[in-house]
Length: 487
Ligand code: SIN
Image 1 (cartoon, rainbow, N blue to C red):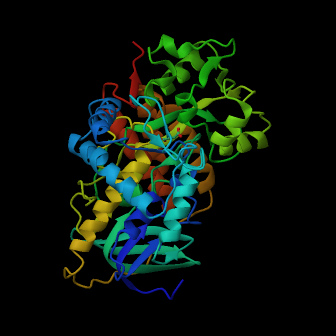
Image 2 (cartoon, helix red, strand yellow; image 1 turned 135 degrees about the vertical axis):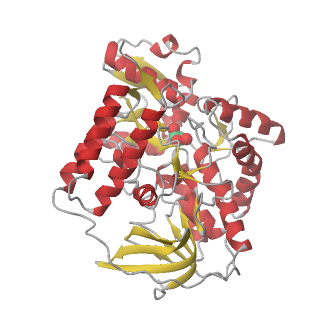
Image 3 (tube, rainbow, N blue to C red; image 1 turned 120 degrees about the vertical axis):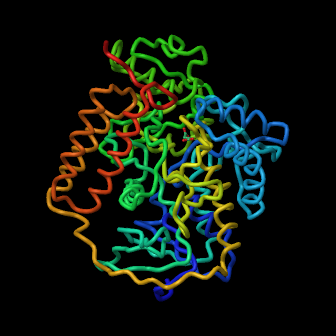
């Protein structure tokens, strides 16, 4: 990249759809730097399989809105959902005009698949189940601004309710980068949980930094667990088995072949994600530990073409699909909760700071995100953030300089504590929660916060504490927050 400057117009933290699409909608003559913690593709967008949910035509918009609100279990902001579904069509048309190709049938018609809790087929996909990878590559090819790779953001530069930039760790140095506007697009909290489907870079750092500055997070108890994940591997990111498999007929069965999901909800495999995850988790505890995804109704050739990533990844782990049954378990997948912002992505109570994508909380997903609405959220709200920044591009901002000191980011012993935290969160703050376990987890996190840990672990602990506190505050089950009492 060109020489690093000390001041930019815009800094964007994150290289998923939310960050890259923000960059791609900013005026060309702005000075913009995109910050990537690792390789640019180490983000959740890259690993997205199922697709992008979008209303098929104008007439489908009301029903996309209704499905999103229903899945969200009463916690959605209706205006946010209306924006998502109305502007979604234009955002996707815009992306396709830039040359992106979604999968089509032999006659050239767009192929729409179905996923759980959608009342009709409205999920676009690309490269079969490689939707995220294709989208990411296209966004990267369009990018007109430089990326600073291998860069850990360690703090936001904040004074009197204004954000002036970020402090970073890059090539063994700590230094500040200043900007008129900072956009957080760094994703959710996957690494807080033992089993998850997220990129390894997704570790709740920015959420923790916001908490350390008193910036509000909202709905942090709302953590989504994907029902069908192959977790029996040593990989940090577990293999997702896309919901579109169920949308196209895959069945969830126990070791005797029973389709037990109908005992929980009449919609069976196509019930909303929270219901399927909770049902599998409960059944595994009470009835049968061994649960499988049965994809054997697919023809061999069709399966390889429609789900090539799943086919090859599972082949590498010794499974011959579509014949073999795949052992599954739910795993952490997506944070509905996040940094509180308005519908232009402006962070609550903080000037010059934006948030977009999974790290944001506009309440567009409420208590449970409808399948494949997250890529759409990234496309839609990134355009709003870019628009707002361009409107304010000539606003004056005083120059304020900050020191460049930072406590140790990592200390000896952090790794063990990180693993302990992951177990703690999985066991006590997971799919099914109990008040006593949440209290126990809160105490353990408080104890860890007393230890002389590195700053990055501290940020994870702050985010975890916030999730637990929010879970304790919500005393009744709602959406992804499922609380049981043992009376
Ligand atoms: C999937 O392919 O099942 C994931 C889609 C999503 O997370 O919305």
